[in-house]
Structure formats: C-alpha cells, structure tokens
Image: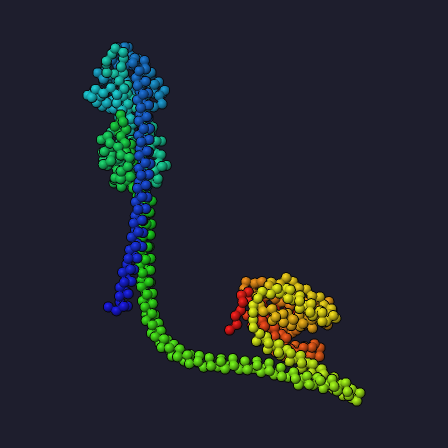
Length: 584
C-alpha cells in the first residue's frame, strides 16, 4: 500500500473515532437529561393528582358525615320519636306537620320519612318516592342495618343520596327508622373545580356500584347509567387506592389517574388528566433531545464530509506542490550556483570599490594637502606685489591683486574643509559618554569669543548625554552653529536654540534658528559636497560643512535631516544611537 493510501486509511479511522466521541457523549447526556426530566415531571404529576384525590376524598367524607350527623340529631328529636310511636300504634295519630317543619329547617335534606320496619307504615315530608321506601325497608330488614348511606335513582332518572338512621327510644328495641333524602349537587362545587387539572382534567364521584354521581366531562349521566367498568374503577371499588397510574378511562382514552375509595360509603373518588396532556412537556423535551442528537449527528457527518473533501483536495494540492517544489528545488539549485558565481564577482567588485574609495580618499587628502604649497606661494607673491609695487600699480592692478588674494583665501578655506571631510572619514571612533549640553555651550563660547559683533541670543536646553567621539561631535556642533550664525546675521532679534530628547533606542538633537531659512524643495541637495542654496556673495562658505556633519553622524550610526522654509528659519536634526555603533 502506498503512503497516500495508508494515510487516508489512518485518517478515516481517526475520523470514525472522532465522530463516535462526539455523538455518543451527546446521546448519553441527552438521554440522562431526558430521563431525569421525565422522572421529575411524572413525580410532580403524581404528587398533584394524589394530593387532589386525597383532598376530595376527605371533603366527600366530611360532607357525607355532616349529613349523617344531622340525620342522627333529627332521629333523636322528641317529635321524631313521637311520630315513630304513632306508627307502631303506641300513641294517638297526629299530622305530618312536625316532619314537614324539619324538612323546612334542614339545610341538608329535601325529604324526610319515618318508617316502622315491623309494620311497614311510614310518614313522609318533602320529596320522597314511595318505591324507594319500600325497597329500602326490605333491604334494611333483611340485612338488619341500623344506619345506611346509598345512592338512589329517583323516578325521573335523577340521582340522590339516601341516608337512614334507626330511631332508638330508651328502653325500646323496636325497628323504627328515620330516612333523609339529599341532593347530589352538594358535591358540584367540589368536583367541578378543574383549575389545577389543565385543559383535559376532571374529577368525579361514584357510588358503590361504580355509577357516576357527579357530572362526567366526556359523557352524560344518561349515557353512563351503567357502572363504569374501567380497571381502575374496579380496583378502587375493591378498596384499593393509587396516587398515580396510567390506564384507559371510562371512554377508553389513556389517562393519568389517581383514585381513592370513600370510607364508610363505598363509593370512589377519581381524579385524572389525559395522558397526552400530562406527557406533552416530556414529549416536547424528547423531541427536542432527539432533534439535538439528530442535529449533532448531521453536523458531525457534514463536517466529516467537508473534512474528507477538503483533505482530498489538500492531498491533490500537496502532490501538485511537491511537483512544483521539485521543480523549484532544481531551479533554486541552479540559481544558487549562479548566485555563488555572482557573489564571487560581487566580492571582487566590492574589494575593487573599497580599494578605489581608499585611493580616492587618499588622493583627495593628498591633493588638498599638496595644493597648500602652491597656494602659499600665490599668497606670498601677492603680498610681495602689494608691499613693493603697490605704488606702481594703477587702480585696476590693485583690484586684480585684491581678487587674487580673496580667491586664494577662499581656496585655502576650501582645502581646509576638504581635509576636514577626509579626516571625518578616517578618524577612529572611540565611543565615550559625552555631556552634549556642556559641549554645545563650549562651541558657542568659542564662536562668541572670536566674533564679538554677534548680536543673537543662544538658548541651550537640557540635552541627554551621548556615547560618541567627542572631537567629531564637537565638529558637528561647530558646523551647525556656525551655519546658524551665518544665516541669522540679517535678522533682528535672532535666536539660536539647541535642544534634544531621549527616545527608545536613540537620542535626537537639533539646532534651530529663525534666520533666512531655505526652500524645502532643495532638501535633497542640502547635505551634498559643494552644494550651496544661497549666493556666495551674500553668505560666505564652501558648501562642505553640512557634508562633514552627515559623514560624522553616519559613522556614529545615526541620521541627519533638516526642516525649513524661506524667511522662517531652519532646524537641523541628528541622532546618535544609545548603543555604540560598530562600523564595518
């Protein structure tokens, strides 16, 4: 297998591992989050349904017990006992008016009846169907019940609760009972409240046969006249309770349910919500988790596809680059050989140039030095002519003689400047710390001592010290200050300022004047040899002084430049590195 195929195989394996490392943790974490949220939500729902069923079972028992207590109180009333005696034949007859008054006073019962179990005779008041009395009397006689609570269907189909309580006279064990009929609307407010059961929840009460006594949300009483045969109902009627169970309800829809039997009554309290509503947040979370996992898998797969495609392109590009590199290496080797040959030629030319520079500098020095002798001869003969023959020369002759003497003086100054320029190029640099402020003041003192007619103000600011050759830097200050003095003579209130500042790697110094200045377009010529920006008849000089300044500063590794405008003065800057400069 080639290196390329091996690399691709290794990469694909690593890519599969990376995909698994990205997807598996995401799926596991998502499932854990989903399972924890599901358990918490189901527990919360169980607590809600269980507490509601417990509360409504307790409220139902209390409502029933209050009616039983009220019936027991009426059963012990003297009027009730008297009516019971009349039914058994132990007293004279009287009207049913006392019984009717009891119904009117009672807040619980819409009908009352006194019955003698032995004779079957009864007295009734309010709403009390005769067939219910006969059936109830037979059942209580057979079962020998002393107290009873049961749901009954009235002749019109309505449902009601029937309460029975034996009337016990002191010293008598006869079987007279008091019956009370109570409407089922006593439970309406309790079981119609679905504010905590969402959009699909309901609660209802059944009797001991599983027939609903309160309104059903998804079916009417007429349709539900038979017992509700859901498995949860059967379990509840058997005396069991569940705080939370998911099972089909009375119409077969999956429902989250809580149920409890009502003690001492035999009925059942049912509280439930449709399972779809209970599980809706869980299903939403499940869908979101599934979407996250699917999105992660899609993103990783897409990333893998893009990476593979990118690597395939990179592999092709790498092969192309390798081919190009081979060609470039071959070309570079050829160029290296050619460059080596050129370097040899360049080194030879450099050596020749250095030799020529040295010869030129030596020639310049020698020529300037050798010109002094004939120049002295010219000056000497000019002096002799002036002393011996001045009386014999006419006015033109004397003018010619003055021209010769002036030209020879300029020639001597030019020779001295050329020697100084040559000396600046050959002088050995010994970098020592120089007090630049003291040096500038020393040069100014020398200038003012030799020219008492100077009418300008010198202002030397604080200057940072420099590592430099003192003799050469003194020449720099001398040339720059002399230049400033020369060009400020025509100006009234002339001021020459020397200043400087310390930067990160170098010190910057300047000499500024308010003299005649110069045209900025001539900046490229200002530091050239023999370059003059003003008429020699107006300002003396040879045009070498600034060239000397540039040569000295360059040998120190610094820079020089100038700024100025006509009639607005000029400023000359130079820098000296903070670290000693070693010139090659």
